[in-house]
Image 1 (cartoon, helix red, strand yellow):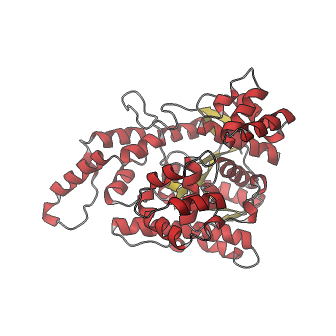
Image 2 (cartoon, rainbow, N blue to C red; image 1 turned 180 degrees about the vertical axis):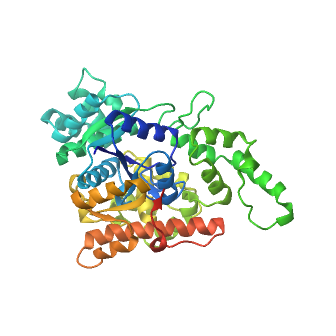
Amino acid sequence: MTIAGIIAEYNPFHEGHRYHIEETKRLTGADYVIVVMSGDFVQRGEPAILDKYQRAGMALQGGADLVLELPAYYATSSAEYFATAGVTLLDQLGCVDYLSCGSEWACLSELEAIARILVEEPAEYKEILKACLEQGKNYPQARETAVRVCCPDQDYGRILQDPNHILAVEYLKALLRRKSRMKALVIPRKGSGYLQESYDAAVDIYPSATAIRTLLRAGDAMAAFDEKIASDNKASSGDKAVFDRRRCDDIESYDLLKRGCPYAADLLWEAMATGDTVSWQDLMPYLDYKVLMKHKVLGKYYGMDYELARRVTRIYRPGRTFAEIIAQCHSRNYTDAALRRAFLHLVLDMADHPFLRDASRIPVPYARVLGFRRESGKLLRLIREQGEILLIQKTVEGKVFEKHHPVEHTLYDTDLLCADFYEQIAAAKAGREARIEFVRGPVIL
């Protein structure tokens, strides 16, 4: 039996992701593909556009066989922690043969060469890195310069400017550090670039997740949809309209969505129309509260050191938009992504912990099942027999951590609280009853 693993966010799942899964199976001959996926909050430092169960269902429809949740602490961390936790989880399953990741244009040998430099840190690399930091460059810039100098005949520095390549390098670093049995596989990306905000469905059926999120949050598209809903439901004013795909057949945005994101188009459009999703705008009242009430202890939160805490306390004023706050806090030492993650940790009450000090040794004590295909029963049995990690299919199984396992309990309890928090906000906006995490089970196809 051959098994491949993928670490992803699927925010949301689109045709490029389906292609990645298909190519992984084709190139490896894998009988199963396991996906380790972020939960309700993602590495960009924001809420996912749909909750984790809906996104897991999309992944299963798109070819995945088993979807496991990456603990929230790691899913909302830097690329190094995100990648290390994902690799560690897959490695501890005891049966994964390949780790498959995407690349814009770099090949595996180039990514592996960079990973070795960053893991081994030769003397020349460390000297240049230190000099660049002393000159005022931030860490990503200093690292890029050091890699360029160490490999003058290669364009490795450019690789470290791309978010997807940075993640791929971090995956390979984690494999090297763990001396993992998993072999790396790089699948060239098709279609739009990782951060491209638009796409032309007439020539490209592989949009970026960024383009889909931009499309869904475009005011004009949603206004057109809302207007059509209202005209079709004049007799029942005051009631929430029931989603009907036919109502938006003539809306160009929906057609684009259907081509680039066929497994999720209806679900995504309905969620955006009814408000059954969460964005940073929804989190702002909670951020205001935490900054005002916790201003003396902001530095205890994950990613929020005392220098940043002082800066936030000095400039923060309730009523400002999230973009304005990020712009005012931005500096050489704090990238926008790092700021978003720090503020998200503050809202989610994620404190800094000693076990987060060293990314190479962070604990990943469980693998929580978000969904699986019925024919994957043999895979689940194999993991239980060979794995070095607790496989959790029922939420209540995590209660084993409540006594005598403080780190494990912290990670698991945070996952549950994050899920409940996301669900409470989404449900209130959509006018439906919230479902607590303890009554929700894996998606089964």
